Length: 167
Picture 1 (cartoon, rainbow, N blue to C red):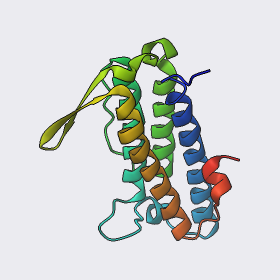
Picture 2 (spheres, rainbow, N blue to C red):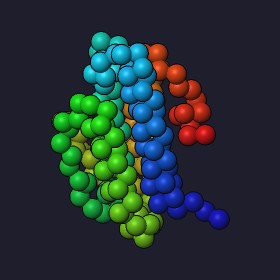
Picture 3 (cartoon, helix red, strand yellow):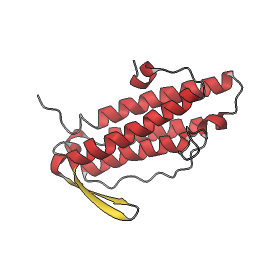
């Protein structure tokens, strides 16, 4: 049995976003328990030239909602990047999951060869659907989810691989 484009995308994204939300909840609980201003965590970064936690979540969200839309031949929804608090981040993740659930398998399946056009800063990149998913979205999405995890772990939140994997 082969793996469909839908199976390779939406359920994977929903699972990882769900795990990410659980990791964020542990981060928020850690901040509360240690009496640390939650903004310290939401604004934290691994290095001075890296993006903060809030931005990591926004980009992870953008990657997967854009992917589902493009693979389905739809215009990706635009979200304002105004999140600041943990509550804002949970809402962003929930909204992204709701959008992903609204895209049906029949809209994505068969999109392996669909032309996907990405407008990046100063250029346009054209990819086939499968290449877009596997070579562009997966690495970007997992990079930003992993970086969010690493920011919280670096700041003392007691999380491990099981939290990342959702086991």
